[in-house]
Image 1: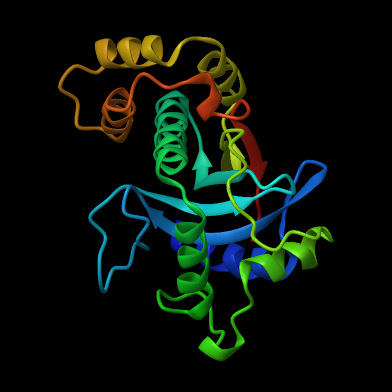
Image 2: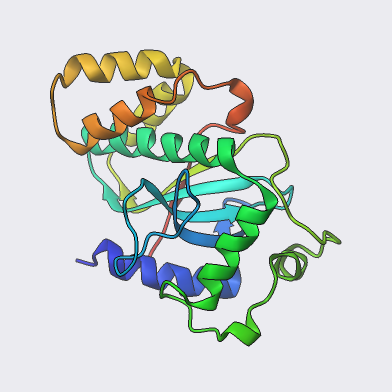
Length: 221
């Protein structure tokens, strides 16, 4: 079975070359392993002490898209865990985003400072030029649009309960999600409990911070 590291490597190469196909649209890959709130890149050889999102992308409207990748989301606990995880990271990104931080993360990743990209420093395309190349839009300085951030959970497969859990997660107040999960896992050190506590730590969340319900993307090697 493929592991998450190998899947990340393959998807990074593919998405840099072709963009990210999500439903009937394309997304631009901006960065990967982005940590918040510092906007540093998670790097095992340098720094890895903050929560990170697997991939940061941008849509044609200039909205940022937080993508959390799992090899599989097989059951209820992994489903709740990843939904809390992607929401926590997305909100932290939304609250701290600035054009210069987006540009810096993009340049560091494409320059190969943290692996996955083998482009030399003299060949790194600007975010604006890559944006225009993918979308054909005359936008010289892509930046967060102020209309909230999108959330995507990507995996090679989802368990039969995931869709119902995703709908419930989107329909009830996040404070209730945190309360219910905390009550069911008192003192737990599981990933679901850890991500639930992180999400609880950034409440309340404004409706304007999250652009859309959580979206899903099925990926393959």
